[in-house]
Length: 306
Image (cartoon, rainbow, N blue to C red; front, side):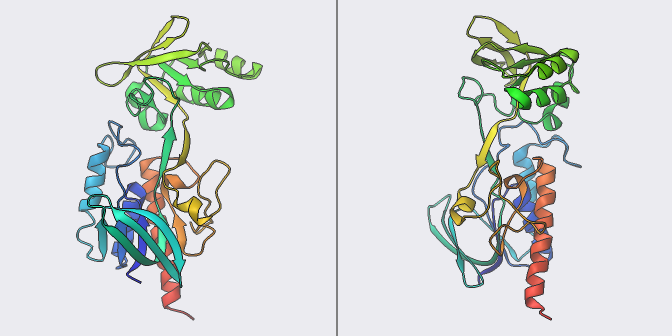
């Protein structure tokens, strides 16, 4: 095998895993397949010692801190397939810069490929994503605190998110883009916390020059002025590798892992936003480090049998 570990994905989870494995003197290939999910965001928040750092700068620092570890190699390569080969894996793909073919063998594989968000197909959502349209109040709530906010969605999901966001602002309106499918109890809870409800269909979101949200326009001609809109966007795996391998997935489309962060395929691990749990850059980094420790211990047991 060329490598002890192939890490697919060079976001917070992948970089953190590569750092930990490099410190274990493991031969590692970190396959960097492109920009991260939070590329459009103005900053990464809640990351101890790096609060507010630009996403690209966080990744640059991560790559820089890998350089002293001679056993860690980073390649700009898009992994397209992974198959079992003996007691390890064969991965194939191509370079993202020159389209050169890549054939990689490794004893273990860590999937840290992340997820992609599925936004409503309405004008303004994609254009304002990461600035005026936000997914996480823990990541972005402080920046828009005490200002008029909207929360998008229907049913139990929008109710829970609106109540959560009310921690950051007393001026919140739930916008459902048509019937909100809210139970009488949900409406009562929202009214109790002075959270408005607008069930008019949305025409578009209008942004301000700085990329924040300026207003929401509805089909009846009315408008709602606000500086940001929060939503729980649907997601899908950014890479089809796990699905193609046939690993177990959760009902929400995350990669299932056991207590050792291993998938249903022996030797194949997953970390970061690809697996169930709260999604934040700091937690993804911690997940990558934990997976790396478990992988190293697995390899050590293989190398030092009883």
